[in-house]
Amino acid sequence: MSKQVQDAYIVAATRLPVGKRKGMFRTTRPDDMLAFALRSVLAQVPQVDPKLIGDVIVGCAMPEAEQGMNVARIGVLLAGLPDSVPGMTVNRFCASGVQAVAMAADRIRLGEADVMIAAGTETMSLMSQMMGNKVSLNPAVFDPDGNAAIGYGMGLTAEKVAQQWQVSRADQDAFAVESHRRATAAIAAGHFRAEITPYTIKSHLPDFGSNTVRIVEKLCDTDEGPRTDSTLEALAKLRPVFAAKGSVTAGNSSQMSDGAAAVVLVSEKMLKALNLAPLARFAGFAVAGVPPEIMGIGPIEAIPRVLAQAGVKQDDLDWIELNEAFAAQSLAVIRELGLDPAKVNPLGGAIALGHPLGATGAIRTATVVHGMRRTKQKWGLVTMCIGTGMGAAGLFEAL
Image (tube, rainbow, N blue to C red; front, side, top):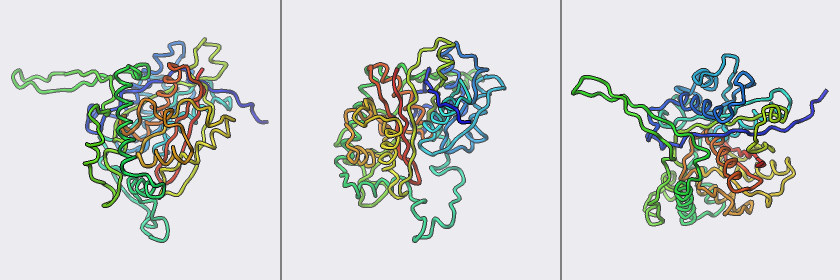
């Protein structure tokens, strides 16, 4: 007997400020960031008894080393949640965070849970290299007539998108400058305050005069990546880093970053029982595959799927969080789908704000639900391309 699908509602969402790789979170463990995000998001809804949580689903793109060993369950325990609360780590590379939100929502929609937490955590500071601590690709990847694109670096795929969609270097650099402009303006206006929970970093420093160890605390409350001095002239001086005669540079690519975020979702029954005020309704999620050598175009396939699933028109979208893996692929998606540039990343994107891989989807979910609430808008989208050739899109209705 099939169950009737019910709605899932986001009632709390928060994130840490995003740190640059080797920046303010360079020695901060990802499981500690996750535990902090979990405690912080639950503090926003004190009516919710942690014992009611059906599961904690956490996105992480490189679940190894400091963020291995099922970091979700470890984060749950470090956060001091009851032993009865389980945890599961999921990996869909850059979409891991929004995938976690979708999976948590689905448990509620199917009637299998009334309270769920979705989250994401990622450190890129503690990674030994971009592909993980031990790279072991299948030998078939090196067959030029077979699966070679699996082994392409993300920057090379961006170069191929730039070529195929004819995205110029000048357009990429202009897009990057605008990302920084929007992000710095948003910070100055305080638009991220509602979604960020400040994190205190404690450093243990030797005091040789007294032969003691001093504990120095620093409050981190602002994203570290946005630059007020980003200009077209400065970006034009940067050399391509992925192809000798290419157009993709460090300046028009997303920043490697550290961060974490968490979202509480509940059923309508729990919404009413606990008298909770919803931030948004989860309206749908879609994922699609594309050729891995042009993985950046993934949202071109995923966005129409989720809109059709929910019966929402593209023109109805008010706020689009399109993860800026690279300016080249972002512009290709915007142009191919005819997205309104004014609606895409109104507070800046990953080129300025950073991209902590598996945490990004959860982070940008917090951005879109709080942003729409502040601006009194209705329909919001979180979408991104995914390594090895995929795209994902999550749809939210602000309430």
